[in-house]
Amino acid sequence: MKKFEETPSAGVGNAPSAFDEVIDRRHSNSMKWGVPQAFLQPDEVAADPLPMWVADTDFKAPPAVLDALHEAVDHGIFGYPGGATTSYVDAVVGWQGRRFGWTVDPAWVVQAAGIITSIKTAVQAFSAPGESVLIQPPVYAHFHDDILLNGRRLAFAPLERTGDGYRFDEAAFEAAIRPDTRIFILSNPHNPTGNVWSQDELRAMGEICARHRILVIADEIHQDLIINPDKRHTPFASLSPQFADNSITCTAPSKTFNLPGLQSANLIIPNTALREAFLRQYDRNMFPLVNSLGMVAAEAAYTHGEPWLEDMLSYLRGNHEHFAREVNALGSAVRVLPADSLYLTWMDCRGLGLDAAELDRFMLLRARLWLDKGQKFGQEGHGYMRVNLGCPRATVDEAIQRLTAALTN
Image (cartoon, rainbow, N blue to C red; front, side, top):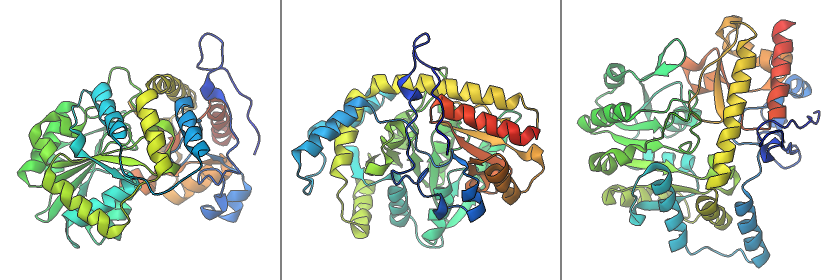
């Protein structure tokens, strides 16, 4: 794979940004870059497609996080951790207060090894095999796969496709609920569409779930990644004590600060009975300790990482604007939809007239781009691709060049 030239794109004046640095990840045991043979066919591997799929970024973690990790490594002992320290919980709680105006009681915070792990655990704790879980496709693949893996059924309340994106349909949402629906998994903000839900939309979802006695599991892992300056993330549970009492909020520093390999997440569960039931199921499933270096990284990120995050958000806005402008100028066959959040973008490729499998092969072999295929996100994702723009501008430029060549040739 060629080494891209770095382009000064988002710094001050003509100065390059730290996010412009191109880092070779091919030999780092990266799922995204390092093991294509585990995910692709031999001819697809041979095409050497540019990885822009799985949702981690190609940016180094913030310097404050790296410094904290170096200090912990230099200590040289990696014994069993003693759980969340006061300073750790203060960092988690303080982040929610500063960024979102949500006052979180420290007693509500539950450490976990990851959000996927936590959603599986919550599904086991708060529903029975054969009962249904409500989701809003197109939506994150684990919302589909892990529900079925645990012997539950899916209730679908698809988002409504509009001219330039998607909208929440309140009537369709309530109509999708079954007598055996026990849980609603909310993607807030929504992955992959980038919708940032308004307070009115969240209240409508919450009130419907309350009427039907449905628990809300709010996956808010992308909460920090609002790229539209006119939008603001609202934690679902922050809207009312009633919503807080009927919800589990899932947060993690992993998407924001590029730390998913350290397996550290934090759930916020205000309802004592729900919190205790979740912890009992978690303890049944696994040894309830989290990665000690993950805790170090999370505390440093939430304590010192805010300026770095603001710089990254500015860079991501530039990536989104650049990619959408260039791709949408190629014609109507492929359209990048506007996104208010995420370092991911949702691309409508239905104009190519290909079925889902053909589209995936076209991108891998003709465009030589390794994107997330839309069908992973449900039936409503057929004909779409999710593109990871959490990368240096040079990588975005390379992707534009490859897609342009495939579409024009």
